[in-house]
Image (tube, rainbow, N blue to C red; front, side, top):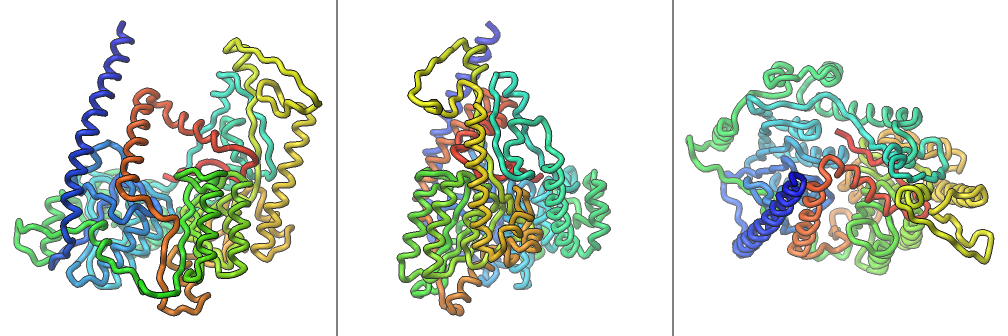
Length: 588
């Protein structure tokens, strides 16, 4: 009875949560409708408030993405912050005479290393205007502090903390789970470092995977340490010592070791802002958010016939035309559209992908090869452009990556599941089959694979690997044997990839756009347009709302097992031969 009572309580709670969510939703719609009628104006003596605490950094959001300000997200999940949108607002703040500085809250931002670096460079560029940046938060994660370290003054709550103890990458392994439920993974791969299959067959990292993970993690951490040290005017060695030994363990330690200017409450930080702005005590501080300020940024050379198309490829690479991923049909169409548009003189492919289907990757590769024949193609790698993400980048005339981009992973694998024990022994279900040929029930999941089947699949993978190698060799102007020395599924940082000939230039999206402009001799006479076209903000909002309610229901039901569920859900995309990252790398 107690169990039924708990279940009933959960159901009632979820019902109430759903009703309240919809009531809040309609309230927000009313607020947005009224606010959309107001003309955005920047008052004199205004501060750009970048509140990124708890936000998820993505490539872009809708231009009129609604900002909940200081009230947080009423649905209890993180809100997205668009890197492109933020950079546009920061650029406008640099030149707008009414903007005097930036108030920065970055504490627990959820972002990849390359995205953080791109945003950090935009903040450093803003500082060249001579305007101030003040950072404050109650607690800083490693990424949040990486951003905050550019500030002129860094304030921390007296009871807060700074998580400054180096980077870690943790993987989930499913071997024990599959053994319990009676599923036997059938694994095929080419490349000793192609460890994307390891979560299904091992209970910990292989020595090869541990080696490559340690190698790129150390490089990313050292790069961050060097940049932070330069901002804090410290030596990299002294800062690395603080980082590796986690010497900042109490709030006061942050001040002692020079990571924070002072321990203050937020109202005291506001007093500091008033001093910067020359305001009297208790005077209102005029603030504007990135969404509103970005809306005032004028598009550069709007009438120019020299247009550079930035095609944003973010997510897993899959076949068809699915949303929220890099689907071959949809992206091939976008590339063709840009190729046939005479006003578009060059294309920048912005890649943020761990890979996926080799077939889908090859479809996109083909469209880019055809496009390259008629106009320049530049690849700009974001947080990750590995495996299939690297595959679709190699047709480019120039590949640009950040020093801490995750890339490479030139390898291939196949995955199949034998569910005989699950369906026969655990579920009591049996099957029988009639065939007309020796291989008519090829790769039947209800039985172990035969040696003939294994030979066929392995041969197919080896052919796919050779195709991958040849694509890279052709695109990079390398001998296939030279490619194989840096392939085998091994992951590299942008720094390491450049040293091995897999990347041409270190930099962000702006660098790639500048290279594209130089390729077409446009000088400053060009306009940047983004593809695919964004959905209206309300459609995006409703889709996100629906997805978040479903996720909330599953989190309540599954509890601590929710991350495992997410991992298993991704297996649905593992259709056909895969060129995918060794694992879903989360650096924290």
